[in-house]
Every structure is written in C-alpha cells, then in structure tokens.
Image (cartoon, rainbow over all chains, first blue to last red; front, side, top):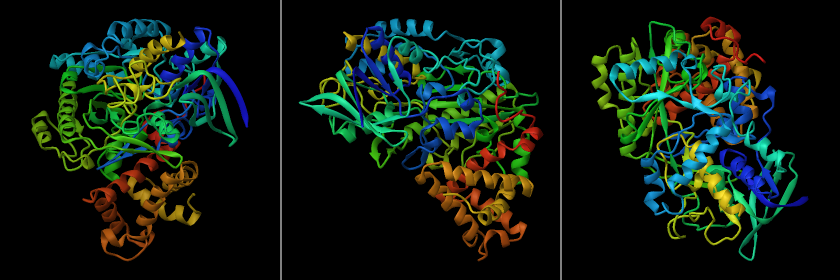
Length: 484
Length: 127
C-alpha cells in the first residue's frame, strides 16, 4: 500500500474540491487531490450521450433516487466532476436565496453575502463568465426569448463559463473543443502548477482519525490497489452531496442523526413544443436562455438542448406513432422547469454505491403542475403548433392554447411524472451546532478536528438557482480561512 | 451480464415495434443493449435484464397469450407494446420507459437514423 503525506488532502475534484485545492495551493500548502473518476481525455469528449454516460457519469448514468417514484440523479464522475458535464450555467447567489439558505440558520455573520459575492467576482474573472451572445442562443433559446417578449415575463441569456464556445450543443458530453471553463481546464491545472498533486482514479472510502482528529484517508485505486494518504493539517471533503455523507457514514464521523439526512434537490422535467420553423436544437449553446419570472414561486425555467436520444424518451406513440413524433425533432424546442423542492431525502452507503431515498411532496408536485403549464403557455406564445407535456394521465398532446386549462388537472402523483435531477444539496448541512446539522459555519465537521465539508452537501438548503457558482464561492471563502 | 445472440434476436422483434424501425436497425439496437449491459453496474444491469426477460417471456400478462414475444403476430405485439406503455402499474410502465430510454441511446447512435433526421454524426468532429 502506498502511504504518503500532504498538508491537506482534498477528496473530490469538482467545483468545490478544485476550488479548495487551488486556494490551499495558493497559500503555499502542500495539497493532494483525490478524484475517484478518470481523467477526461480528448478521445472521451463529444461522443454522444451513451458514451458520455458510460465514461463520465456516476454509475454510468444509472444512479437513481428511490421513493414513491424513481428519479435519475446525474453526477459527473471524472476529473473536474460535474463541471465537466453540466450546462456551463453560472448564477450569482441572489439575496433571497442567500436569506433562505444562510440567513435562516443564523450564518449571516459567519458567511456574509458580500464575502460570497467577492469570491464570485474572482471566479467570474477566472472562468471568463459572460452571457450567451445572440449567435449562440440557437433556435431553442431564440424561441424562449421570443416567448417571454410576447408574454412580458422576465428572462435573459444564461451567463456561462466558456471561452470561444462554438455552439456544438454538446456540453453534457464534455466539451469536445475544451471551450467550457470546467475545473479540469482551469482550477485543477492551476493548482497543479502551484504544486498540488492531482490524482484521478483514487476512490476514498474512509477518513481515518486519531484522538478526535482526521489524520488520513484510505481507499482503493482504479487498479484495485489500496492506498492511504496522510494529512498533516487536515482533510477537505468535497466529494458531492451524495458521496460526502457516504464517506462520513462509512467512517463513523459526524452527528449520526444528520449525516446523509436533509438531502435536497432541484428536480426537473421537460416539455417539448413543435414549430413550423426549423429549431435544430443541436445547434447553439446547450443551455442558452432562462426565465426567472417564477423564481419567487419556487421554480425556474431553462432551455435544455437535449439530444434526440434523451428527448425521445417521453415523446408519445409507439411504432409508427413514435416515428411520427420523432420525425418532428428538427422542429422541436425542449424547455425544462427546475423546482426548488421542499422535500427532504436521505443518502447512505450501500455496498459500493449510494442508497438515495427521496419523494417530492404534494406541494412540490403542485409547483411542477404550474411549471409545466407555464412551459406549455410559453411554447404557444412562441408559435408552437403542438406541445407534449409528457405527464402520464394528462393530455399527450396540446394543439392550442385553449387547451392549457387541461393542465390544471395534471396528476400530483410523482409516479406519473418523468423527473430528473443534477442539483443536489444539504446532506451534510451547516448548522450552529451538532443538534441540527453536520458542519459548523466554517465547514468543520462537528466533533472532529481537522475535517471540513466544503461542497454542496454543506449548503444549508437548496438555492433555487444553479448551484455551481455558490458551491465554488463557499469553498473558496472557507478554504481561505482553513489555509490560515 | 449481456444478451446472448438469441436473446438479442427476440428483443429486436419488440424493439422494432416500439421504435417503428426495420429489423436490421432493431438488431443493431439489441447489440447496443448487449454492450450496455456489460458496462453498467450490476444493480442497474439486473433491472434492465429483468425487463427484457419479462417482455420476452411474459406477454401473457398483457395480451393473455402464453407465447414468447417473437412468436406473437405483429398485431398482437403492437397491442402488447401499447398496453405496456400505458400500464397503470407504475413499475410495469417504468419498465417500458427504462427499456425505451436505453434503446434510444443505441437507436440514436445508428447512422441511418441520424441521416434520416438530419442531425449530423454521433461524435463531434475533432478540431
């Protein structure tokens, strides 16, 4: 077994882990970053959805949350984590979301919004964040823009972390031209230039303690060999809202009642509309435009440039009926609604995988019902001839805005819906003390010295906006304090 | 865990009905399923394999005819697929959508399908 040592061991190389590694390395600390997944080579990029799932996603894209229904949970599992396979959306934490998350637990003094925003300023410079220009909206985004102009709703081009994006519509397959400023393109190589030792193919299974202090991590390399890395100053856990609680549970660390509890999501679903004009959804930025008119009501609407393999799943019809539906794909726009769900689930290790339990509440499903109706309304406003709501028990197709009231009766049973999520939160949430959460406002795990949780699992609540930016800013702020 | 050639031939009959594609495309999709099953975690593979087994051998549950799916008439198979996709029981219905979702990844990888839809090659061109 290899056994080496660094000042800090960072577990995970996604938005939080890469940011923490860079900050610690900039402070002159000796850092080892351990990533379970593989490096992302040129030959792994832009291969289509099936190869992306099989090569770059956790459990080859088969991870699900089980509850009243089955909800796919998508996470990157590669160097750079989910930043490699997300839509490159960068959302500054709005004040209302901050208040719900940090203000509600009394963390306003420890984690001030101004401090978060100051880190966001740096991140936006580092990652070249800018709104998607008109030429990258694609037909999908241009139609959404037309819809909100006609309806008078609030919306805007999505702010993205890209440089010289060519609009290949392949963000979810790892950018084939490396234009997305994801972590394996930015913070990880920068940390490595400062001396950080970044290792792919290293799955951390447990954190080892001595006299109440985290002193090392142990795990298994991709070739099956065990390893241990010792930490002189401490361990930064940034393995995601699914894996971080699993590692803590396996290690017997943290307040047991809260590790893996309070797991929150932004579940989402999509609605397709068919237009007379060509849409060519595969051209332009994968996600180029969004509507935040309804954020105060708990949902947000985005363009979702799904490939035909994924968009086709809930299209109506079998056989010739399916062929008729899918033949319209070049004229189809697909938009999604993400819900700031109030439901809480749990995460726990089970064998080599995570067991995720989650069921949306009735209130969440009512929000979905409103969201799908708004999506359909937008499609008709933009000129759609037909809309496919995609909910079992509801109308398969709407042919006119006069039919929108039919959506008021959509079922509220999650088993009738096709939900999916990639925004995961709060499974090791921050709290003032160990009675209500896992980590303090500094990210330090209650009851263990030298162990911090800095990823989305530490966020006190789901945000209602895309989380990568907040995850990075929080990791940056707290890492600066850890570095001393 | 994969799909033996005879299992691929049987499920291809159903896939042709579900996707509305000719037999040769459906056979390619069945081959994709074989490769997929060999690459995903066991817990995921067992679920999909169970769905494939059930639709191959238990059409009786949907159409009341005790024959394997490849020995049913086309009319009977279409009735099976329609009833399966609209099943009231959630796990039966989701079994259909699980198979459809995975099959579509193989279907969308087929150059003939992509040409017909005009959506360009599966893999991005290298810069």
